[in-house]
Image (tube, rainbow, N blue to C red; front, side, top):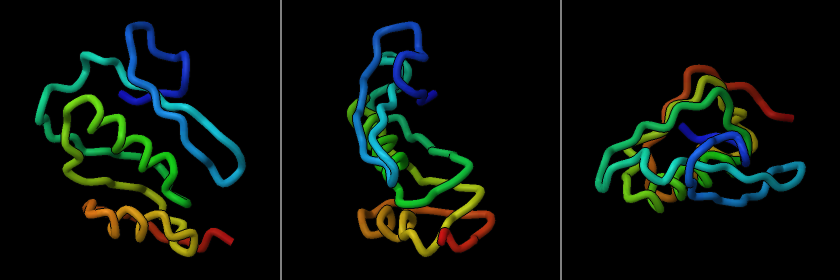
Length: 100
């Protein structure tokens, strides 16, 4: 489970990242992902993709591999999914809406 900073009780890996409206940090327990474990990242919304990229970096820092991303809503004109696809990730969405 990936969470906002200071929400997890044990030793964590942390990643700081840019949001469209500021900065944030997400964390994962250091012992929650096995080496070479395949991880599916599921999130409710993708806009610019900053949180998704940070999540992928945490998975990879922990020794895992991102199998793909699934988002409920893609704000397609903010290009987050395209940015992930251009970095070699597989991405699926359930619904698409404009973000502006």
